Image 1: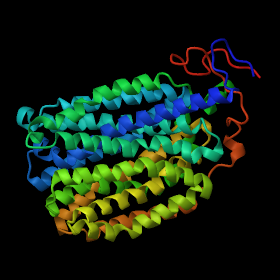
Image 2 (image 1 turned 135 degrees about the vertical axis):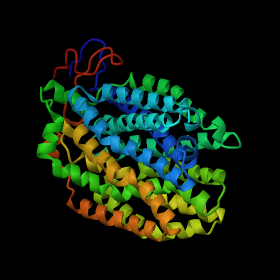
Image 3 (image 1 turned 90 degrees about the horizontal axis):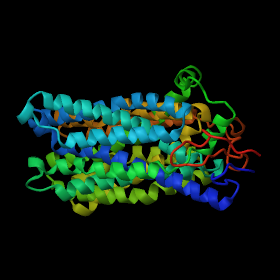
Image 4 (image 1 turned 30 degrees about the horizontal axis):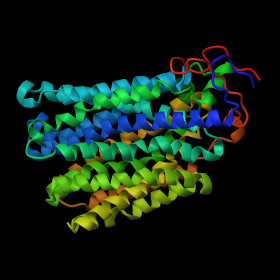
Length: 460
């Protein structure tokens, strides 16, 4: 294979491995920053936004705070549609840069937003608008970051390659919770809560530096070279693969709804219902999240060996079976058992989250994969992740116990099992002809400034 002057020679295995690692790092760093921002809001919604931004009773303030949290989830499908369109039209790389700037900018602005005591009703209104921007940013982020990593690998290693960006969730959760833990204390409500949000500006700089140096994914670059880029990916997806979008949405129910109960609602349940110390719960959550740094890629790798549906299905079943034991462990109020309960909940979640990116993405061809996978993934935010803490908080306020919350988790598992039984990956010959074993990938000089394929292409 010949290449243009100054362009990396992708026929060299060492060079290709280096570029693959760079894509994985760029995807994982980006998702870590995005999820740090998103989870930071979730933690603040559980702990501080109620009294600071909503002039209401304690229970009412928490419900209103979780309502603004849900607004961010509702905005995520719009982000997936917008950036999925451009990601499938012009490439994964520059869409990811845009999502990083939108998400990070909204987070920093939340950190300097006046409270209800200062500007009255404008405080919750502006908070909600910034949450919408966060939702749009993270909605466009997931599909691009997963594909940027996954499409650099072969089909046999897609589970692991797509799981690396997924690792941004436990890292972002641990990092965001750790920063809140560091600033928690007597002055937390008075202003200490702002610094974790403002600190996001440093992470934006790191993320931009990393993402500007990555090449476009080989699969998409080859698609551009062949002139096969889909002109209207959103229209084509909704016309031809709407069933796959719905399957992807419902298969996430058992993963996403319990996850936000295990990471956000648990802070409300632990502090208000069980009277546990806020700092202890934050520390337990950090420990549980850090385990995901190992378990998420492990289960992605395992899905390459045993199959996506088997590993994912095991996670769904275990999550459903764990619904009541989870709350029983929390209710002991014994530190070791509480942290064990939180760890097991997230490990069962990781059994689904590790293989999930490849499971969903393999339902769509390269030309509409950003749009289709992103839409299916983010629509679950509207029916599962977004309303879950709100539903749980309302149940707790009405009943004073966890029984129906556990039933809700079991119901989510049943929905996911049905959707999983209907999901099937596309045959390899439909979307894998451009894997690294078969295709000379076009690249250009100045990789940090232009997307591969924009200039003269490599010739065989």
